[in-house]
Amino acid sequence: MRILLANPRGFCAGVNRALQSLRIAVSKFDNQTVYVYHEIVHNSCVVRHYAEMGVRFVQSLEAIPVGSVLMFSAHGVSPEVRREAERKSLQVIDATCPLVSQVHRAVRRYAEQGCHVIYIGHPGHDEVVGTIGEAPGRITLISTESDVRALVESRDPNYAEMRLACLMQTTLSVSQTQRIVESLQRHFPKIEIPGKDICYATQNRQEAVRQLARRSDTAIVVGSANSSNSRRLREIAEEQGIIARLIDGADEIDLSWFTGRETVMITAGASAPEYIVEACVLRLKENFDVRIEDVVTCEEHVVFPLPTSLNS
Image 1 (cartoon, one colour):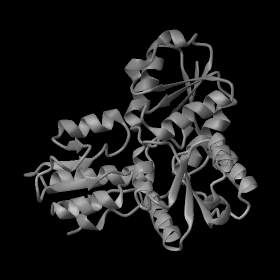
Image 2 (cartoon, one colour):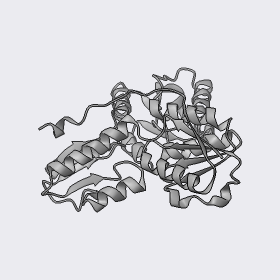
Image 3 (cartoon, helix red, strand yellow):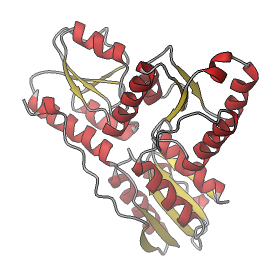
Image 4 (cartoon, one colour):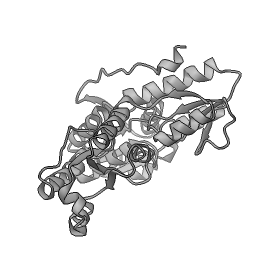
């Protein structure tokens, strides 16, 4: 068996920032419970690790005592959540990925200019919920090319007459999103596309999978089922015509998936720890005659500064 390790893979700068922030907060506030609004990142192993350390992950702020320590996850939150945290005098540590915050600022800017935002994203995703909350009356969520056609067929005069802009979730498939953007441009030629909101790490990991899938017979993607960027990696591998499996840990690997004579690509979503990748490699090495190749498709050197609230 030959294993191709996709590189880059795993943690991105935004995830590293969020997890480092949480580690510091747990140490700094060791005599208090640290609360996190939603999962700090979408990875069950990471969340379980911090839960075992005493961190409490919550879906609302109702049960958090006044004055407690609260961290916003890497996916960001809506202004309403921020206002509620302020009303409860919570000590907020904002671990929102700076690239997500950039999209939030763009939504506010366009809304203030009287523009209507067409936002491409997955309904219900934490990042999407927070972003839409920036301008709920001036943003329309779409997910597919069919949604674009539905906008056109609705014949809503707002879409024909209003100034429009297109923004997007940071963890989408680059190729699928491009098709949606092109459809929007055909139907709404004046729509503003300020730039690519899909983050550098998402793009780099997708491109690595696209390249390595052409050399592989099957793929393992390490990541949780609720991780948008991890699911996109599996989809992209499958688009190249190979079987791809999304797993949370090495114990999910079924050896019957392999003959021992194929090329297996292994990658990891941006919120998946490297130790799980290493465990997957070890499981295959224990059962097959394995040759490993670390394939670097690009280098990443992005580092985000920690939240200023951790410096006080």
